[in-house]
Image (cartoon, rainbow, N blue to C red; front, side, top):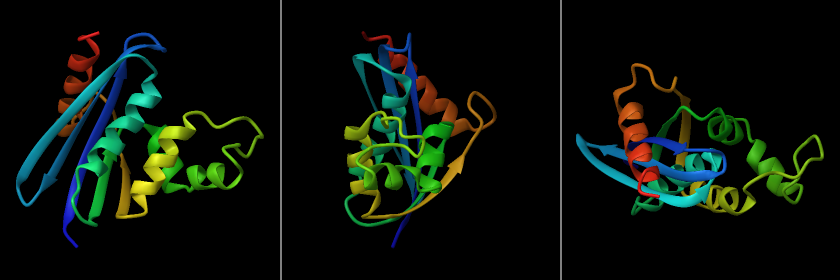
Length: 144
């Protein structure tokens, strides 16, 4: 399987408010940028949409090195929280309703097609690709 680096970020002006997401796929020295947005959304929905969009762009199963500054996304995937939420009918361990079940369902479905390794990166710091994803996300959010 090929190894693909997937960098993602989401942004939202207000929460909810206009939002955007950005993703960079990197494989064998080639990069592809993806981005989009919505008029009324949340930061977490944009973070999830960035990962989903990156995974959707892959044509075959890959080893995916996922880099995100979203603890929500990284912890829920790496620690198995999202799978637990799904198993409990989108209820968290504290018996509260899990947010964004529609996006988590899609993300988990896509994740099962790949071998995903999650890496949390500090936002707005030294990671050039994360900063680029942030710029893509902010630019998209400003279109609304």
